[in-house]
Image 1 (cartoon, rainbow, N blue to C red):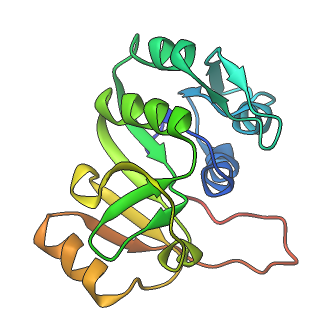
Image 2 (image 1 turned 60 degrees about the vertical axis):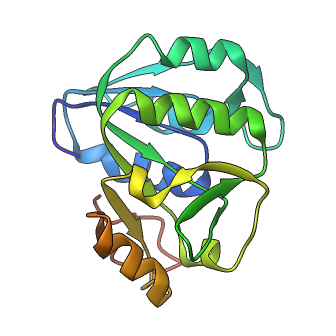
Amino acid sequence: IPDRAALFINIGTTTEAVAQALSRHSGLMVITNNINVASILRPLPNVEVIIAGGVVRRSDGGIVGEAAVDFITQFKVDHAVIGASALDEDGAMLDFDYREVRVAKAIMQNARNVMLVADAMKFTRTAPVRIGHLSDVDVFVTDQPPPEPVISYCRDNGVRLEIAQGRNLNDNAVEPA
């Protein structure tokens, strides 16, 4: 993510890690439906934070529902950072909450570049609601090499696959995105 970019960041602990990594950036406009992302970025003097309205899930601070979808569609940004609860070997990106998925789809449709961030745990999980497919994203960032079918799917569909640098679990610092 370059300085002076406008971007969406959606719900998830992995997207929250991306928000932490953006602390060294300047001139960002971040639109989010994630209260935790807003809280991480709010104190930063060089980042403008815009938060969607809607229903707040108590479990994770995610803002979902039609009001959030309507809000997101007011913008067209440079980058979207999205997460997923599961990633099938056929490239399907999946989640558990259809309301969250509606917001994620709006985010993807209103960004020039889409980045999926998902840790390796997502390769072994399943979820019932389809967000989209890997072919809908430009960059897929994960922490370990994915299964071979996912690697092939990325290669065949022009999705840049990046393996992020790990961090020490006892260290609160996050490597730059």
